Image 1: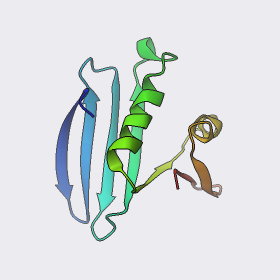
Image 2: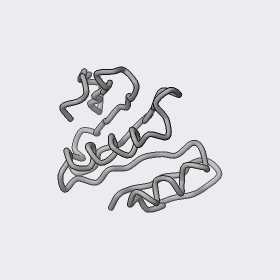
Image 3: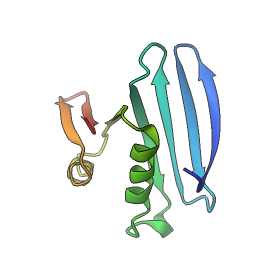
Image 4: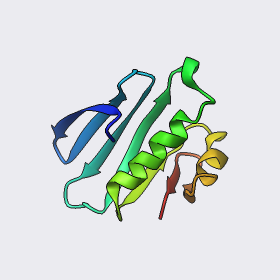
Length: 106
């Protein structure tokens, strides 16, 4: 992910890395829990309104999946409209309840 600045923070029980694109139009966090090295969680994928509908989120998602190799990428959807967007990019619905919508690439 050469197009991003990154900052890693160690928290009790997990590690988080914040990524911001060089042009500051795309940002997201990846975190992983201690003891679960095969699962990475994507959090807050954000694209600036002026950069939307130009493939920036799709490109970032491809970079993330490519960079983590064989590990599972999980995410939690807060906007139901995004379920199909992630499905179109290879993610599967894992859990869909009133409280949580979880998706994963594996």
